[in-house]
Image (cartoon, rainbow, N blue to C red; front, side):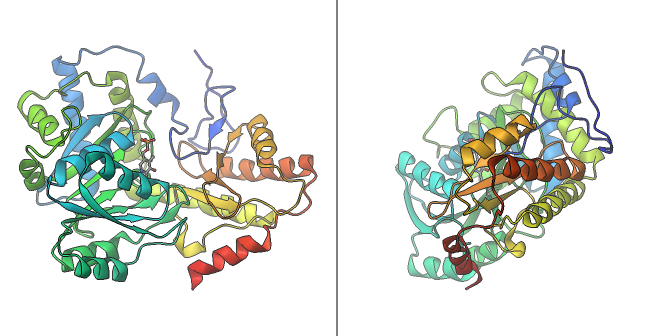
Length: 400
Ligand SMILES: *Cc1c(COP(=O)(O)O)cnc(C)c1O
């Protein structure tokens, strides 16, 4: 077994198992030692002990949305986050429904691709690499097309790290009598999504993002009325949210083999989430991670794609420096040598990279990240991390 190490000044945050780099990625991410440790035993999936674990997990997740009226239920589903997005779309959008997909990055486009696979009607608002879909555009699209039944929004578009304006999207959706589905994969647990603040029918997230579990399943949180009326909608046996829900209500079990160890790890992660102060506590740590890291990187000359008001506490996109000596692959390796795995960028117009703020780490770790970036630039012979002028022109589109 690995040895637990401590970092001077890191408070309650242990370093990853010795020799492991920190994952500055949006999941899988760096998990607590106790989360990994929770996987060191076996459970029978049908046994009462595991059924109690499943019930505990559902109850703890539901507690995060402030559903005081008991209108919602939580349905865990095997697979990665995309399996849950597909399960949500296939289960809640009737075969004769039509979805307005709001895209400003890879995950919105993936949802549209999922609709294509499902063979169900959809229409797309594609804002490009990062510009946010706004309430007024949603309203106009819904007015123009009365056949649209649902709107699909991405909460934090992880490709750029933008926090999309889901509150105004929700208002526009319900003002026009349609239903909202949310992919809150990379935001849930750190950014509030309380049902008394933002109206929606269903949302999805997964085990390996802001709750800080390990990968292996996701979950749908939906109105019970939607779960009931979803019967018969799904194109897929294994991705049928209604069937999973009905079976779980009846037997307390997952329909097919659950990722037992992942569930055990997730319950430990949920306990740590609660001990940290729930969504507010987790969100505050991530925001601090972001603020310290962004300030330090800007101090080195790096520039963020987004203005401060659009930056999520999840992941931040930086432009690659214009300096000819800067080569991303080399920067990546130099950062990895120093114990930090960063993330390539996804912008199509200019070169970029991303640094995640989520996972089991705090501002002390983020200061070391900035120091590692400073050293890596020096080793590459990059004197100035300022981006090319095209990058700044690109960015000015958002302010407009
Ligand atoms: C991570 C993520 C997903 C799911 O990705 P998987 O690789 O299938 O886990 C979906 N949407 C968003 C916004 C995400 O960040």
